[in-house]
Length: 457
Ligand code: UDX
Ligand code: UDX
Image 1 (cartoon, rainbow, N blue to C red):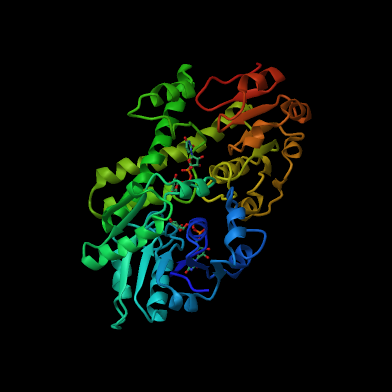
Image 2 (image 1 turned 30 degrees about the horizontal axis):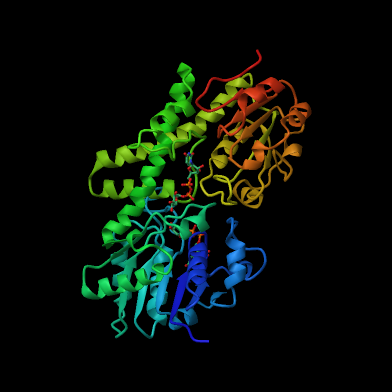
């Protein structure tokens, strides 16, 4: 069978995976391939147990796999065959050298660019899908054109705005698809070629064309603004606790102002995920390297507030539970950075659990999808048990700390949980997910975020 185009994506992770699966589903006329250096990941994509949990993903993979969607580790061959290459390898925050703790580690992106240069025998469009500091496309372009060969590469920026847990819906009906290109005839032609892929299902007015730097920067700024809303409302949660205001009432009242809008105003234990912190720190690093210190300080504060909110949660637990957690058992409900994902990168659960362990608390951690990742984050330890059943996690515990907003935690039988716990039983709701009044009437001492605590003594 022959296809109109060969589309390749390097990096079969949370971003590359669902994005390519959607393109394959919507465009049966193209051959779509995902390659990854991680053999286990590719094997999982080729099996019934996909490497990432994303509602709705399974069905689409089953529909397309083997038809026009393929997964492999043969990067060299795949590059040779392709017309368009998406680069979606990870770009973690650097842990070493200059910019450690803030700048992005671009070694995988650079390695991928060199690999493309080495293997390509014909012209390619290379699409930057990973979130990268502004002006990385320039670096990729320089590497790709360092070979002195006749092969020509056009580099585009096409940042992904999908959120985990809703990736399929976000890809199906994106608010916008953003594509940045070089301001040249060739660059614009390459952009139109990529736009024509999305045009198979995205309305034309949602496809936004910009220059390459605007596109790169817009991705960082979108995440910084979203994270800023969460940090903003979290600062207000502390103010509410101190005054008797209720943070969800405040959020509702301000969210009705159409200029503010209702979304991303949910007070919480803090934001997590692979992008927010990394992208803000990227912005901070860029601002500082341009000597824009006030700009850097302003955005850095969004990350600081997020850490403060997590620490505040633990401080509150200690204060409520008679200033000692040593030897007390705490059931941690949820470890993923949010509901509907097994991803634990930058999850507030990590910092919170580590602080609780520092207090010598005994943790029973439960999560419907993220226990394997939780184990990788915290390891084995005589103070930690990983359990699938939330009822068992709560048995004999002095407190439940709800960290992830999984719907299933709302539907549990809290009477049964209360009966099985050590008294006085505490419930710290880091997501304001539960019915606090009802829990209080069952006997729990309830400590929500940004609302008055409900205690029996
Ligand atoms: C990544 C980035 O972290 C994010 O900034 C960007 O917006 C999109 O890509 P994600 O898909 O969540 O996000 O990362 P991850 O799930 O770690 O996937 C990256 C994949 O690339 C991994 O499976 C890894 O094995 C693979 N990889 C990495 C390669 O195939 N080659 C490499 O050289 C490096
Ligand atoms: C985010 C962006 O939404 C997405 O567009 C981008 O491509 C990648 O980064 P993601 O990290 O998957 O997506 O999750 P998101 O839904 O944005 O949530 C991030 C964190 O903020 C989660 O920990 C979530 O629980 C928290 N959050 C979100 C709140 O605490 N309150 C809110 O009101 C919203």
